[in-house]
Figure 1 (cartoon, rainbow, N blue to C red):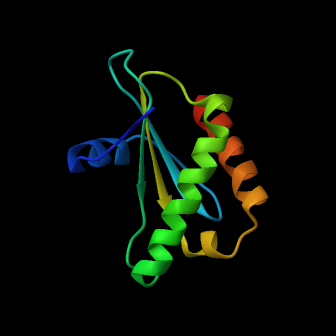
Figure 2 (cartoon, helix red, strand yellow; figure 1 turned 90 degrees about the vertical axis):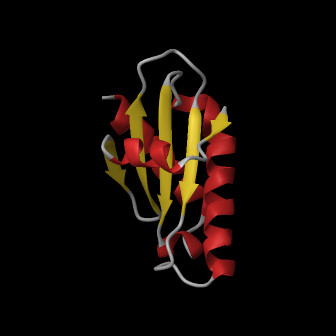
Figure 3 (cartoon, rainbow, N blue to C red; figure 1 turned 90 degrees about the horizontal axis):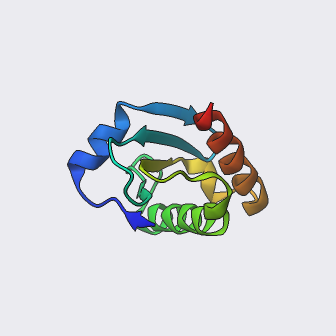
Length: 107
C-alpha cells in the first residue's frame, strides 16, 4: 500500500465515487493499471486547529491500517476526507463505517 502525496492524484480521486459517513468521506477511483493500492488522507481547516486535524488524520490512518485486508482493491486510489465528528466518535464505529463504505464502493 502506498500513500497519495501529489495534488493531481487527490483531484483525480475527487471526480470518482464518493461515500459519506459520519467521520469521513471515502473517495475511490479505479486507475487504468494494476498497480499497488494508494491511499491519501486529508483534513481541512474546518475541522479545527492543527492538533485536531492531525488527530483526525492519525485516526483515519489507523482505521485503514487495521482494515486494509478487508476490501481494498489493487489498481485503485482511495482518499479519506476527515470530518470533525472523527474526533469524538468511538474508534470501533469508525472502523465499521470504513468497512461499510468499502462495500458500497465495490458495488
